[in-house]
Amino acid sequence: MTTTAEIDLAELGQQLRVDSVRATGAAGSGHATSSMSAADLMAVLLARYLRYDFDWPDHPGNDHLVFSKGHASPLLYSVYKAAGAISDEELLTFRTLGSRLEGHPTPRLPWVDVATGSLGQGLPVGVGIALAGRRLEPVPYRVWVLLGDSELSEGSVWEAFEHAGYERLSNLTAIVDVNRLGQRGPTRHEWDLDAYARRAAAFGWHTIEVDGHDPVAIDAAYAEALSVSDRPSVVLARTLKGRGVASVENREGMHGKPLPELDEAIEELGGERRIRVEVERPAAVTAPRSHHGVHAELPVFSVGEKVATRDAYGRALAAVGSDRGDVVALDGEVSDSTRSEFFAKEHPNRFFECYIAEQELLATAVGMQVRGWLPFVSTFAAFLTRAHDFVRMASVSHARLNVAGSHSGVSIGEDGPSQMGLEDLAMFRAVHGSTVLYPCDANQTTRLVAEMAAESSGIGYLRTTRGGTPVIYGPDERFPIGGSRVLRSSDEDRLTLVAAGVTVHEALAAADELAAEGVPVRVIDLYSLKPVDVTTLRTAAEVTGCLLTVEDHHPEGGLGDAVLDAFTDGRPVPRLVRLAVTTMPGSATAAEQLKEAGIDATAITTAAHRALAV
Image (spheres, rainbow, N blue to C red):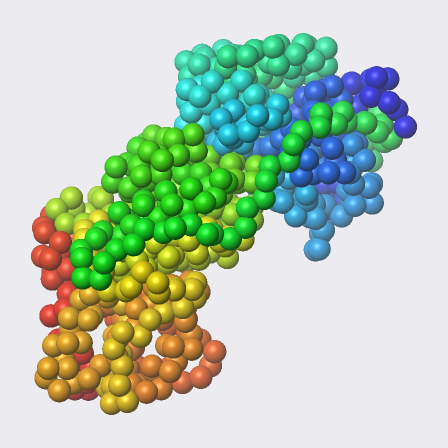
């Protein structure tokens, strides 16, 4: 074993190249050349600058290394091998069934904070990790993010550059592997390091240009980055894709492929090495206090008063924040609309304004949960579509965070379709392991916010309504995730109305009108759209034979599909009738919007008569 003080950094870089080549060769696939270009950058970082206890991945003082260019996973795994975290045998299981060494890194490995591979996400998440260290925790860890030059075309990267520069995150260092070649050919700026430097400097970063294959120069660049105390630093490294093997070095057409002549390539690189790096461990720090459950004194609303569920959300979030010191709130410059401003006023040190940059908004939350914080992200439901890939990758990362989408559906009224969230339920229901909730009144909302805070894993989504709706539930009622409420029922019910959120009140009005006509119907408030209350829905189907769903959402992927999922086990399916927003709305009052969309009480009554006449 070679000690850290004795390590030849150039030799360590060659070892990382050889092991990347061996891993991709064994797998018959993978990104060898993209790993080879950044090997020297990682060799110097591992041997001289990274502070990490691989035996204690959750050490609160550990640095964070994020591979934004996740396709260079062979290099990351080779780094882990050099640090003694994995064996050579495990390295060669790369990309095989059951292996922890997946094609792109995921937290199946305890040293991986977040899944990467969807380019443009590592730096935004790194900003969140660094921001937690700057504003929430007095812990001197650093965040190192390795990026590829191709992903610097992503807008999310520049959202991150701006946010980090604005927050002066001197504990963040970005390392850009400028190897000139993307997947299909040259990148936009190729080796023009100045082009990247001008952009980064404009966002308030300290920039360092370096030969990415000169260990001495890289060492000096990292030391310079650490000396900068008033802003983040970016090391722009000119490298060669496929460095060290003449047949692939700086050659197009070799992206994402193992090297063609494996043994010859390894020999050209000088053969296998067995350098072991004793990575310096971080200094002892105090671990943060763990939080469990919710014991907050939640706000109370009187039955019969009209309250917008967004108002209840903001007040409940502030109350939960008083009880739980690990809760943080993030908003996209609409906190006066989402009502997260209530949290901001009571807990200003744990409120984060991310401005109109929804990708960075979600990424910051993902980064903060890496450090053990529980984020609640708030913005308009419609604007969350812009950040959907960050939500998707958060699921791959096994992230724990909550999202609230306000101004949902046509019921927002005059603002028109650009502001209406009509796809959000489908978007979040499709996310692996997610929870999707849609409350209809203020007391239900406060209880669901507390339920979300008490959840131990996964991504939660709460849909809130802009306008006031009547409070129909008492303050002491409970609403478990996966439940529902039967609001009208009898043994003579001829049909079941299933609604959520704003349409619950329309369904109740329709049920009263039908009852006055002598037509009893059941009404279910399906506030939990994922998971759904299968038992209640099946019972209603057995008794009434027909379920009529009504939702302020497009028909695809929303409430109707959530109900349908309760009947996919092969048993007989009841008659299903669906009312949803099928036209393109314009500007109108909330009541006019519901009528035009065919989801108000009158439309429900008409649809019920039609269904019963069949």
